[in-house]
Image (tube, rainbow, N blue to C red):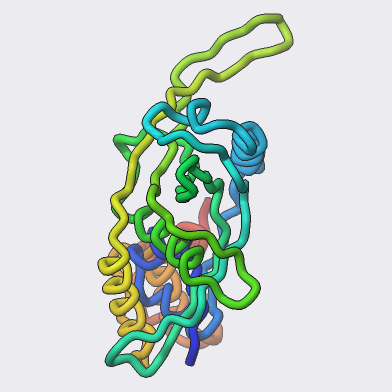
Length: 246
C-alpha cells in the first residue's frame, strides 16, 4: 500500500488522535470539518499576494537576500520507502510561499495568524519538513527545487488599529519570524512512526481528549429502537445536542 500523506495533517490531526488519523488515511473517513470564517482565507490570500515577488528584506530582516519566488504551489514527493516497512507513502500538499535566495538555495515559509508564544512550532516543523522533502525529492512532473536551506513560520499578530478616514480602519500586526532547523533524518524517523501506525491491521485506540471519538462512542451507546433500554444511566453522558434540551 502506498499512502498519500498531507503535510497539514502532521500537526493537530496526527498529534491529536492517531485513531482519527488512521481512519482518514487508510479508510478515507474524515472528521467532520468545522467551517472556518471566510475572513481567514481572505487574510491568507492577501498576504500571499502582497509578498509574492518581493525581496526578502520586505519579508523579514532575519532572512538572507532573495526574492519570494512562488506563492501557494502544490508539491508532491516521490514514493518514500523505509526499511522494515511493507507500506510506502508519498507527500502531497501546498505551501504558502517559497523564497529563492541570491545564492540559488531556497526557503519554505508558512504564514500563521496569532501569537507566536502560543504557537506550536514543533508540530508545524513536520509540515515544513514535508514540503522541503517533497521539493528535494519530487515525484514525476512535480515542482523540484533544491537545496532547501531555510524553513520557518512568519507570524502576524494583530496588536493595534489605525484609522486614516472614517470609512477605513486598519489592523496593525506585529511580525515575528520563527526559524525551524532542518533535520531530514529526524523527519524520516517521524515518517517511520507514521507508517507503523498505518500498517496496523486495526486503528489505534481513541485519544482520551478526542471529542469526535467520544461523540461516536456515545452514539454507539444510544438505543437502536424506541423499545430498547439505553446502555447509559442518564443523559449527562450524552453530547449537549442529544440531551433533549438547548
